[in-house]
Image (cartoon, rainbow, N blue to C red; front, top):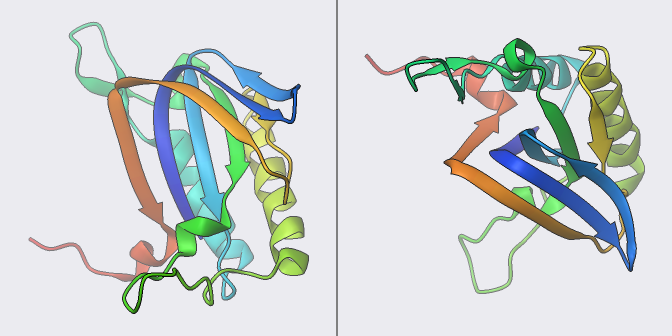
Length: 154
């Protein structure tokens, strides 16, 4: 599972002319589901996002998490996070989960985020969406659930 996390002052998602999700201060999280993902991947990623210390404390240091400040979350499914561009010019999405598998996984991740008590909004799965956000910082962080298996370099 992959996530591109952006700290925002506001964010919204439209499908056509209809706004389907909007938040104020918080995180916009683009989520990609891989074909090998498990429930453990989902739990790892949710815990990591909720506890990332990317919000400033009174001295301006990154010392507060989404949970600490009561951030709002906007979750957007995005299979293109699994783009493989190593060969040719057209990305391959062979490692992305099929829509039939990814949709229930995305719903599961949304439910896990909602269990945090934070306000959670979403886009619409497998729809063409227009995402607007104001990246605050800018702060953008890439997360992969596979990272938990790799040792940190010292």
